Image 1 (spheres, rainbow, N blue to C red):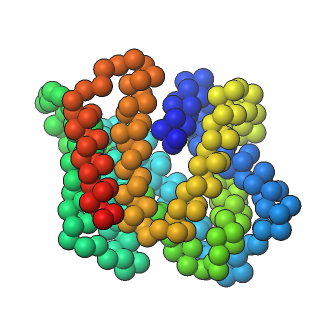
Image 2: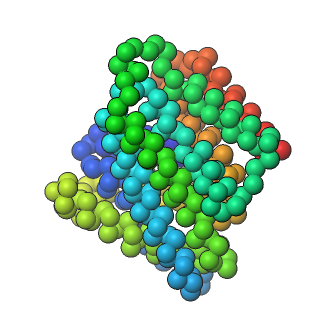
Length: 280
């Protein structure tokens, strides 16, 4: 369902709400509700290990940097490969897991990564190339830096799980870390570079059906992602994330009644095939 939440984010942005508020609204609104539920059930147990918070706040910084660089890259680059680079976070996450955490991939799984890259290419490679599309600019450098930071963020995400004894302790720590880390970033950036009142923007977001649906959906997705990253190796977690690419494109085509092309079907086959090859 993640691609559907992306369409809601786009609608809120078109309504004049800043991207930063859209991104952090689920955290600011959804996390306190989840904390209340965990407290009522006696399952809210903050991690006692301080290294959890070190890795979690490092993840927040890496994720914030990745998001910022991704936006800069998309805005400033006319090089067609920038679109492809923006979809390759699963590659840098996998490489980070191999070199930092020590996860291992079989030759067949490495081949599956290659097939997934080809599948992404089918979705984002332009049908016609012009000279403008081949101009290498600083936007491409922003995109490269973005996926590197994105990969590091996923690695720190996983490293934090190693310092919790069970899922509910990890979830409790994640909720605390998100509220503190992301709230600081949201408030500082909203007030300083954007010159907006973050509280007013947040309430504007909540006053619409789209905003409420996005907050509820993203908060629910965060619970699922927390469980997956806790249970799975980073490489498997990253490969599962490639499913959102064809899902997003098909949802967009259906929503806006656009034709589903042969290239989209080809990309879907490559991505699904790569996932099967990776998991067997």
